[in-house]
Length: 565
Ligand code: DON
Image 1 (cartoon, helix red, strand yellow):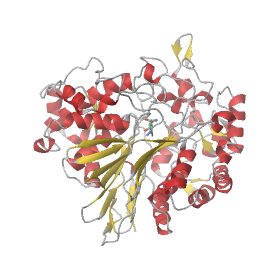
Image 2 (cartoon, protein in one colour; image 1 turned 90 degrees about the vertical axis):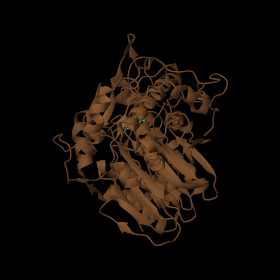
Image 3 (cartoon, helix red, strand yellow; image 1 turned 135 degrees about the vertical axis):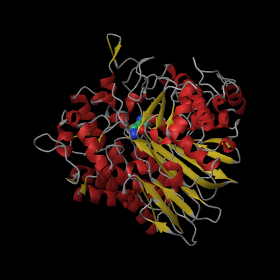
Image 4 (spheres, protein in one colour; image 1 turned 180 degrees about the horizontal axis):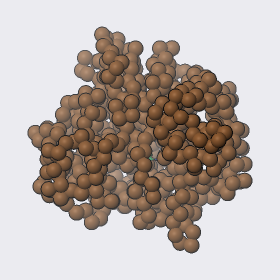
């Protein structure tokens, strides 16, 4: 099983009321009178701001950034994948859009087993790995309901870059180099991303994606139906049939982005708005915050052994529950009690404040079978002069997803099917375990860790964060919220702190070495099994001060860029 340093895209964009702003473009720290965008790529940040300048709102700007990322950061996300959006409108309404991929109608629980044995490569590479993509539907739904511009307005700038090409930055060249063998298995992928001699394009070389430009322009002209009911669905269905896949044209026609109720939780004097299932992100960020509310972290200080210890212990308890309870709420009962204050108290008392605890199994929240997340309920971040904020996280799962480009379209298909539990006890590419709740089924959406989050204070948005990196997303967003709420750190500063992550199984703490020996040493003494990492994760965050000034930062780990106008 590979354990790569996974990244995904997360643009964070905001535009705000007029006031005097200062901007330092060299530190990814931006304060602004009009608008702010933070993404992992300068071209995506720029197109978001351009969109605001030409009269779009935060929703339009987020979508423009997402579509540009599909071109310049296509190994992470794109229209062949899915996304979650948390939206807070200027009028105070909050909603979430679930654009998660969906299993094809012919998918079955044991489709990744051969003679009873799990075949992880089937759910990770090639025709069986992809779910029906949701990003186009989610963007369309968001823009039609809450945007000011048309899909064509935000597609065309990205189409232009796809056609003209862009020079590969280090992150792109590095990831391409790592998967060139797998990309070479698929002729359309090979033709775009590899040279004639089979080697990958390198740092500084020009990548042109003419087919993708045509695809974007076709959607601009004919609308999302071209993707879900027209040529794209047809071409994908045909390729799947010829290459052993299950996805059909009808699967595309049956796909719907879902408007769900956001998950709302109080944490100290703030309100956290997160993504409900089929994301596990909102549930477990909320659950861990509820547990940590029982401890005065501010008194211990951000960089203290006590704070790290408590965070790790709370993560363990929550991730044990994740593995047992979480799945698509349209198919399984996910207990709401997981985010109840009473359950958090029960879990908090189990934490030994001085010693790493063993968590043998999941807990049982109150009313586990009766009080469940409702069926059909419903990250980038945008805020504008009117007060609209959007947090949107998008992905095609692991680097270049399934590695399949649908011939003639330039679209890289996701490998989100690997986010299902292909067999109980068999870890996925992120080492995550799952159970029946997250087993494969026709039309079901695989469990996600994506955690787009908006934080309110006194009813007003004050902070937003989201991240890339599989299950470490939950931990990164949790840390961002704590470092903002408990320790008052601005975005760049909080992203400069060490990341820490425990996902219950395996029983190890991933922690960045920059935490320092004064933290690492005592944590080991308390019994934590530390796995030191040089770096992991990619989180974007923005904040608005009481005076209305915006601050934002793209993760310095991936040369993320925040900017304003
Ligand atoms: O939805 C999820 O939890 C995963 N598919 C996210 C994958 C990810 O973060 C990969 N990239 N960095």
